[in-house]
Amino acid sequence: KIRQALACGVTLLCLLPALAAPTLQNIQARAHQSLNGRWQYIVDPYETGYYDYRRQPYDQSASGSGGFYDDRQPRDKGELVEYSFDGSPTLAVPGDWNSQAAKLELYEGTVWLRRRFEAPPRADKRYFLHFGAVNYEAHVYLNGRKLGTHIGGFTPFQFDVTDQLKPGQNTVVVKADNTRHADAIPTVSTDWWNYGGITRDVLLAEVPATHIVDYKIQLAKNDLHRIEGFVQLDGPAHQPDVTVTIPEAKLATTVRTDATGRAAISIPVSSLRYWSPEDPKLYGVTIAAGADRVEDRIGFRTIATRGRDILLNGRSVFLRGVSLHDENPLIPGRLRGEGDMRMLLQWAKDMNCNYVRLAHYPHSEAMLRLADEMGLMVWAEVPVYWTIAWQNEATFANAAQQMTDLVVRDRNRAAVAIWSIGNETPVSAPRNAFMGKLADTVRALDDTRLVAAALEVHREGREITMQDPLAERLDLISFNEYAGWYWASNRDMLDYRFTIPHDKPVLVTEFGADALAGLHGDADTRWTEEYQDQLYKNQFRMLDAIPGLRGITPWILVDFRSPRRPHPVYQDFWNRKGLISATGERKKAFHTLKAYYDAKERQYT
Ligand code: GCB
Figure 1 (cartoon, protein in one colour):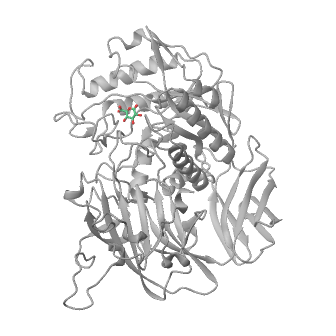
Figure 2 (cartoon, rainbow, N blue to C red; figure 1 turned 90 degrees about the horizontal axis):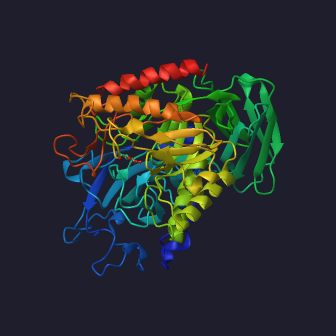
Figure 3 (cartoon, rainbow, N blue to C red; figure 1 turned 30 degrees about the vertical axis):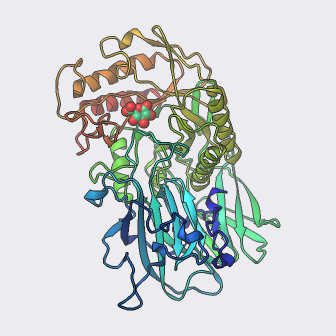
């Protein structure tokens, strides 16, 4: 297991290593202390705080010490210590470092972050140090001891620190490293900013020694009349019973756990207010086992396909969507809290969206909870993006781990309708095998949602078709196509036609055009709002001719930063395909898309 790669080597200090633990379901609802706030930081481009001058990692040396994680203070006036967190500047956590210090805007490498906190550990409890996300590689130390390592910039991880916490002051140090690697997920080339740092919440959770680790409480596959799932316990004592109650629906069940602490849940349902974008009803759900109890708010809905239709609670829907990145253009940086998230999702709702594509990597758990509450179906994705190391087993293990962590984290969210296993991955035998295995991984974890990927189309003459063999393994024919922008133009794009005869729903996961807000001209002039607007109108004509078209997520809600976009006048390191500018102005195409969605809404009710 990747996150169990405890880098404690052979040192004596490793006699009692903390264990990387499976993340607790719904951790924000547990008793916890937030470790968000200002963390002291040291920029370390040469990794001086990690390696000695012979390039040996300090944390794998005989003493296990010597690195910046020691948080060392000189014992007397003669002692040489060449770093100090005290007196160093601070970064807000959660928050990427690029948006917080001018000299870190383009930085890729290691930054050390330190925070002190008080803890009163209690004997009958267990403690978990939880990180919502650190991009990309995190080494975590508590009171000078290594807890472990985690890779993957967008998924949560945690350590059981029950045996490491001290009464009084504790010190946590994180080495965050956003260096890109060819064999990583994502790989070196992406069309988004490589924000580094502790980008999501950090907290210390306290649970009873025997506690609820995980649960899934959802409608069974394609069945509006049965809630199905499981509850998983962990701890020293065998806790025989688990109770799940949904008071408002007058539903309750008490079930026995097996020897592994697992209990299967199956609750017959006669009637419920089913979750939908029009009525995003969430029920209070209580899961209780012995001394532990967790409260959640869960929506119940089914999502399935039948022929070319997507059925939400058995009714055919059109997914009126838009793609978005986890970025607040106004900072600009990663979304830092619920206010930022609400702003973006509200912009989508203002366009009459009932659906969002959270591209191209797992967004925050809080974003999914907001989508649940605001009534937006979600396409959730992992950063298997473009050309990755298909033949490398560790790369597959990494992708499968990120996919698993995403599904485990969000599988109680009614909003999540589709798991996406990747974006624009180029067809080849090794890639087909890799992606096929990834599709199997998701299906084994969750059979109650659709599995898809943003594929590419094939163009021959004027005909656009789907030739990707991966499509056969997926529930949807879903693809990106840049008619009118990367090929053809507003003048001739309507000469092309899509031939998609498959008996599956078609989702167009991307199309778009760059437009600099406020730049006007005719519809043949690149970078103008008129060009983008005309392209959208042409797209609607082309796409509406596809019989199976059941949804679109144009690229993209709002302009976003990208190192791949250097044009000094039109881009300035922003991808300008937003329907909204970096400063929040709505471009012409915003209103055109809204009008299209208003019509689709009428057509589907
Ligand atoms: C794509 C990618 C997306 C890019 C977009 C573009 O196909 O999936 O990440 O940002 O095109 O603007 O080129």
